[in-house]
Image (cartoon, each protein chain N blue to C red):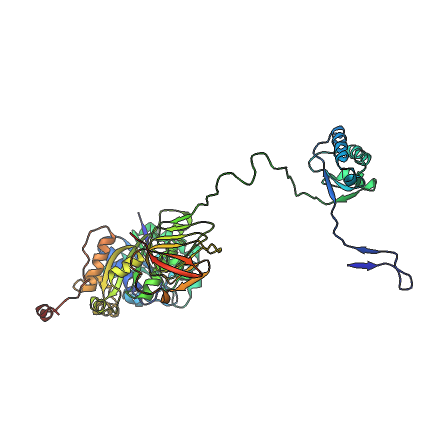
Length: 268
Length: 241
């Protein structure tokens, strides 16, 4: 059965688009037919992270308005056959998205994909709420700092009350916490909240912890979903998260600082 | 409000004034004229000075389908007992027309629709003590959410996040960490209390007396506490195990 997964956070700049790209690529790599939809109309970024910015012809808003059909707008990923991208429009704003239009497009995508990953814009306004409205599962991306945690908490409250499942009284959305840009070193210094602090406040299942890593920036600049960079710490952490999302048991890694030989020797 | 009639040279013959006056309403509960006559006679005998010459309005909504002929009979009976019918109310159009022809005023509906005398057994005051149901929340109360238990206690089985607000007319129990705002006794109940497993609240308030987190102090916040009001001051006391 096809599932709609929203990647959301409330706060901006925490890694929603990076996560959407990595998650969608991770699901596709495991053989699921996956599409990732950019809901950030007016601030299109997903195409850059996915490295398909030069192949955008039609977009999400064109499909909603009937200027193009879905197959014309979907961009096939060059690395993974069963991965597609539906880009956002850069020239419009969030008002171009209508609830009926979004429902129609998502229903159509459900027919041909196993997973529809919705990359939500920041905030809790119209764009973000439309991205979340039809979802079955939510990945809440949070940075280990107080303002991000509070915004995620707010978003979790909205997911529990303002989505279609909530309004219809259906089974609640499955919520997953993904902690990104985690630096064990800075946690030790007390500059960041620890995994346990964040888990205690948000009280939802921890899907994964992505370490702060140069690899994320490099992958973004190269237009490669970081999960495909299998040798990097962030790539492996995303791979673990996708595996857990699909029900695999995997131990959490990257929670403690990697120490060099000298560090271990002197035990500092 | 008064309006005068006539020209300036001529002194006004009358003025029209709106005044509130209390009128007795004689609500007819049966169309049977003989019964009416008998009972009215007994009533007048009880308090003749009060009822003789008393202007009354005949209220007919309880006797459905009254006819113009019946109205004539009732008016005769009421007059015969010394009362002065000045108007009717709650009657159909034909009865109202008949009343106007007899010089009797027609009042708008005095009783809104069906109104029966209270049925036995449905008295408002019940002998049983009134127990207001509290509100039980088993999910975390998240930032931006507000939960209010009107007229009773609020029980939260999870934590209350920063930026969330829980309110109750009665007590508030939080079986997690209280990090948001908690306001007990919001309608002024000074006996209300707040109980929580761990107090990290932004604000606590009982019956409008509040304290902000900067005055709650860091120590003593570990472990379960209760908050109550004593002599206009909030007391925050650890719960003894």
